[in-house]
Structures are given as structure tokens and as C-alpha cells.
Image (cartoon, rainbow, N blue to C red; front, top):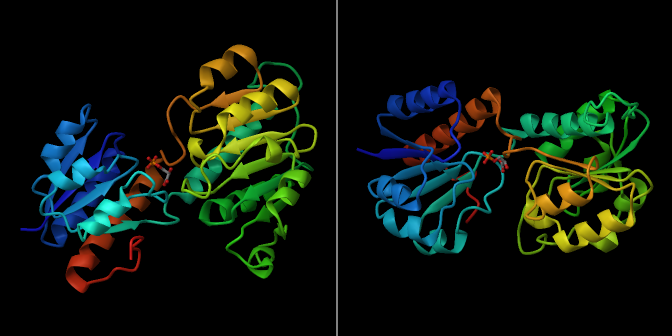
Length: 307
Ligand code: 3PG
């Protein structure tokens, strides 16, 4: 019988797990669950008999793929698939998919929530500032960026976007001002919210030269990946620009240094929380289970990222 393993170090909500299991079993497949594992060996063992795998940010390394002798498909229940070793999966003939858009609203709400929190001095009782009338730049305009734009417009922010993969019309049809270069985005916006994936082109790309273009009252918001920000440059801009602030759901490696040297100018979630809502868990988890069912039953590879 086709076996589907849900392996999540950071578990989905119990309601989401129940619904994923129901989709898998209704399709006539066997469901297996591995949660909160503490050592990769537990993952290797659990995956050894699986035909299909659902993960979150769990590292799908060459060792995991080597242990998974029967594996045909991995679905990352979420957007970013930088945790999956694509070359090894492809070499082994394993199909890799993601579930784009399914957790976008949760991430977008968190981005705006963090912005309000820091603008109000982390609720320290002193006068803070408002988001209304401020400029917000979306660095990439995919599912999360679009949702951030919708919410930010509700706050009365002036919203801009830069996305090298979209036409000006595709951005402006959503009621957002498209900027022609990444430099223009950072020149224009007091808040810049990152919605780029972590890959060879983007790692370390948010650097001093870009950040230093931001106007007074600059706040960088990162609900994407910590690796896209150059941390040496981040520390430099913090030191040189007393107005610069950083919000991140993907805690930087230099978090302790920032906390010690620049109090009041940052907020980092204690654990990555962007997609951690019941709704996002259900949406992404069910999408993953449906995609696995359709892959085995109909040969559907629509969401494959390693074609
Ligand atoms: C994503 O890429 O979908 C988000 O970063 C969510 O990741 P998570 O499922 O590990 O919380």
C-alpha cells in the first residue's frame, strides 16, 4: 500500500493533522506521522518505507533521500523549498512540489503585526508612531507580497513593489505602484518587506548598499529567510544609522549582538511563526495531501518545482 509520511519537527495543529490523515486514507493510502523529532536518525528511520513525504522546513538532505528507498514524491507544505536538496531528489527521480499561496495570509498578517508592534515601541507605554501615510516597499510581489499589500492599504500605507519576474501591469493591476529597480524600492520606502526566496541569486543580497538607500525611519521586515540578508552589513547599518530597525520572523545568527548593542530597534519572533496558524496549517497540509493523491492517481505534476 502507498505510504504517506507527514514528518514535521515543528508540528501542524492537531486539526490539520487529522484532516491530512483523512485525505490520505480516503485515497486508500497508509498514513504515518513523525513529529517533534530530535535527531535526523529518527527521520531516516521513519522515511525508510515511505512512498510520499510531506514536510515543512524540515531538512530533506541527501541522507534523508538515501534512506527513503521507496520515495517518489516530497511535498513541502509551504512556499519555500530551500530546505530540500533538489539536485539529489532530481537525480533519484523524486518529484518535489510546494503548495504556493496556502500559508500566505498567515505570513502577511504576521509581517503587519510586527510592524505595528515595533512602531509602538513594543508597547512600552511611550508614544510610538503609526503606519498610516508611511511608504512600504514589497521586495517581490508573489502570494505573500500581494496579501501584505492588501492589508497595508487598509492601514493607509503607500505601497510600492519591485519584482523582476513581473510586468509593471501585473503589479499595477493590484493597485500597487511598480518600481523599475530594486534600488528605487529602497530609495523610496521607509518600510521594506522581503518576500524573496533563498537561492543562489538572493543569498546575502540584502546588503549595506541597498539598506543605506532607505530614507530616515527605515525598517526592514523579514518574513522570508535569514540567509537573504548579509549579516555583517546588517550590523554595520545598525551601528551607522540610529534610525534603522529590523523585524524578523527568521532570527539572524547575530541576534544576540543586535540585542546587546541596539535595544529597542528590533523584534525577532522566538520561533519562526509566520505560517503557524490553524488556517495555514490546514490549507497547506490539505493541499499537500491532495497533490500527493493527484500525483499517484492522475499523474498530476502541476506544482512540481524540479521539472
Ligand atoms: C514557507 O516557506 O512556506 C514558510 O517559511 C513557512 O515555513 P514553516 O512551514 O516551516 O513554518
